[in-house]
Each structure stands twice: as C-alpha cells, then as structure tokens.
Image 1 (tube, one colour):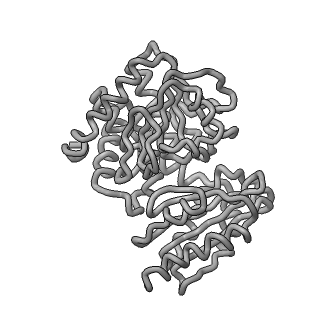
Image 2 (cartoon, one colour; image 1 turned 90 degrees about the vertical axis):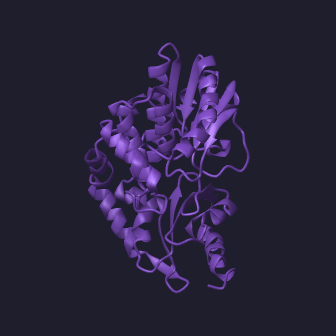
Image 3 (cartoon, rainbow, N blue to C red; image 1 turned 180 degrees about the vertical axis):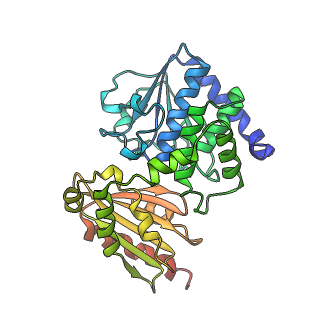
Length: 339
C-alpha cells in the first residue's frame, strides 16, 4: 500500500478538481519556485510527463521561474533539457500549475505568466497563508511535493513510468536530506519504495546530487566550514559566503544550497543558519532546525517562508546587515520559552 487509505481518500476530491481543470485546458504551463531545488525540479518534470501521457493533444510547457540555468547537479534529471525560462515564454496559458509552492511571491519572473493565465492549480507541501488557486492540494505534512505528484499520478493512471519515478525520487531524497530530516515519515518511505519499484535508481540520484562535487565547490565548502561560529551556548550555528568567495572559487549561486548542511553538522547545534550574497545587493538565508523549534516563523518575519525545520528568506543588504537582523530573531526563540 502506497500510503494511508484515509489520506488518499481525503485527497481524491481535490485531485479530481485538478483533473477537471487539466481536461479543459489546451495550453498548460508548469512551474516551480524561484531558486529551484531537487524537489521543485523533480516534481515539475514528473508532472509535465504525467500530463503529456494522459493528454497528448495538449501543449505543456515546463518553466524556470528565474532567468538562469538548471543547477548542474540536477541536469541529469529526465526532461531537464526542456525547461524554458519564464522570461522567454510569451503565451497566455489556460492553466498555470504551481509545483512545490502555493504563493505567487515565490515565482519571480514566472509570476507574470501566472497573472495572464486563465486558471491556477497547485500541488505543494508548504504552509499556505491564503488560497490563491482554483484547485489543488496543499499538505504541509507531506515530506515533499514529489510525494503529492506521485500520489496524483497513481490516482490518475495507476502507475509511474521509470522517468517519472526517477524525477520523483530525486525530489523526495533531496527534500528529506537523504531521509535524515524530521519530515522523513512513514509515507515518505512508502512512496520511495514505490518509486524504486517503478524503476527509479537511488544510486544515480546519490551519484549526481551528493557524489559529484567539483573541486572548486569543495574549496568553497572549506571556506564556509572555517567561518562557522556559534551563539546561545552552541545552539545556533552560523556561516556565510560572499560574492567574492563565489567568484574566486567559480561557484554559481545555484550550486550553494547544500552549504547549509555543513553548518547543520555542528554537534549540539539546534538551529543552522547559512547566508550567501547573491547578485543585486541581496543576501539569501537558509535555515535548518534539528529540534522542535519553528524556524519558519523567523523566515516569514524576514519576508520568506518554508517549513518548521527548513526555511529560507532573501533580504536587501550585505552579510553583516542580514545577520544583524536575523540573529536577534533566532535568539528570541530561546528567550520566549526560557530554555
């Protein structure tokens, strides 16, 4: 059994509403969030394949929210070469499908495409502030958006292709941190088992995502590791990378998402913070929690969002300015409960 029958039954009416929108649409755009990770890209590509299998007469476009390339470690994903930058897409779709997000603010350049679309559908596992879609499933208890896409595919056609399974396994493995994060629940393992049975290769995902770091990235990692500092008796760990660091090591911003996990490894740390400068005079922050503290609250206060144990934000300024704002908010998580 893939997942709890009650969960599947509860999602079925919403899945049927999504299907109704797909059946009425002729032109469909599918897009994940800005700065896409493995869950965003894997889920998007699997959903695009699913739609084309079920409705081959429809025109389906896979969009990138940013004017950027697919991150190197995800270029192995089946269908990655068909992703189109939203800035280069000029049609007005009948349906805009958001994957791994449910708030327009995380669409960057693709928001303009959504705004000229007829209807909006959503499959997401991030908490939603308000509903802005016509049909969808938003389940924060799902380990990854890939879980929802897998369950929708099985609801729709009863099986997964090997390429869909490969994309979705990447989605699930990366968003659970190789099943090390708190979101690695029973449903996540059942879905992973179904994906492998459908033809997904865990070793291929591991090879491309976790075992193919360029030497320049490892040098940058060493710099980040050497800068780690702790606060609140070691319970908050922090490090950073500047634009100069990225340029010296020839590492693009898109390849830096894994650096927060270096900070997360510090023994005794409950909250990990990694800041990196990005073009345009901005700083992007990644937060990870190893305890029950809800860091998404801090991310939302910083204009971002995410999950209780994994969240992020982007602010104007430099590293020092960003740290001066976010660090007191993180320390307040300890002051409020006296722990």
